[in-house]
Image (cartoon, rainbow, N blue to C red):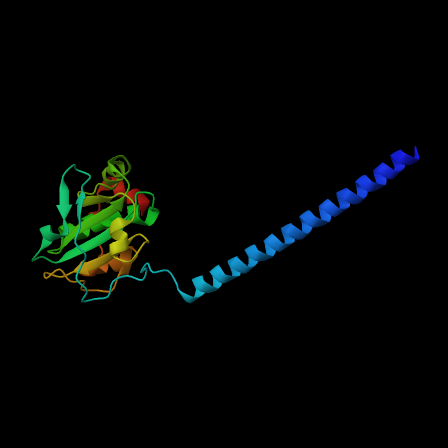
Length: 201
């Protein structure tokens, strides 16, 4: 009985020692992790993201691209050389983008400035939205954000006016009214919109 009690006391002492040793190692490791995290946060604060996100400045050459279109062809920025172009970035999951489409379509038909929409997603996501909006705009498809990254802006809807020489001619236009203003400032009246697209307004 005494031997059993002595063995239990020894076992408890060993277990306590092991527990203290493991706790010490965990705390020490945790301290190292915290020091490393602190260093990473400091480094991150000192060197912000290298991805430009505030748009391209006027006068900058518009980055070239070639993309597939919803209709099955291809379109390139160089196709608009010698013409003024409003380049609009859109997303089929963006409600303000979809509300803009019929107005943009009507404004484009009334303007001498060309309009090209660069949208995220595939044909299956974009075609129904174009049909619903009654829009006949040329819509190019970027698979993720590759063209948005070139143009240094990741939100939608945004737009740029590009001049005849292929240079950015305006600050980035954010939102429907600012984009429509790039085409001359006049927004089409509700009565001028296709019947199916009036429900969104």
